[in-house]
Image 1: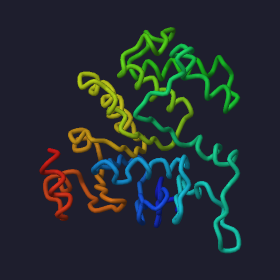
Image 2: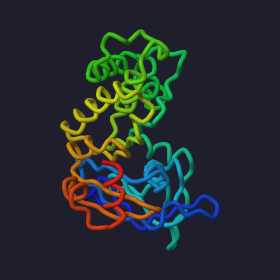
Image 3: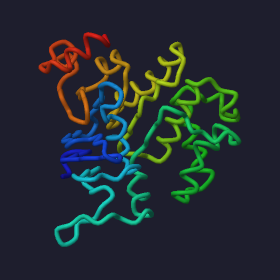
Image 4: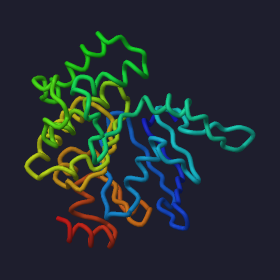
Length: 254
């Protein structure tokens, strides 16, 4: 299992009688950027939440960095791990959501340093030093003392990315990180994500930004109704989709 950074086998997930994921198989190699595309309700965000164990799976297995996520096999069955153990597994995964979820009463610097200090028991000095570097990396070196309400949406999302990176993740998950932004602010967030991809960060990105997916993704995966319908190089999926469902979607969306 160690050849892939992420390995997903036969994952199913239902909410009540509605089956959102209907048997997903997917591998993501180290340093690969995979963009998940598809209509609303196709299961893209749910799949990310299952990888990060924010949602438990009903069937199937997920490995990250060779470690089975959320479960322990025993006597031929899977047993759910205790919440504390799942939290430990989750530290290796950074996740950026649609909403920024910053602490409004904390400065930008404090937002980025809280998790390393509280979760990893890192010294305040070391956490602040690394946070300063990360905030400079996302173009916010002059905003360390600012509060979230003083920032634009794009700036807040860049703080959220720096906060995720502060835990030194080996995998980054992005769940439509630009969908809550005004159009003129989208580019500054995508630029940070491009830099992460260029630096070799393994990334799974749920996005409707098709230009970004075409330019940055190593692979595009098209989901519909809880199934992977199409997967391949961006130019193949966008320009020469093999399925009628993907062709119809991209004719409307592009």
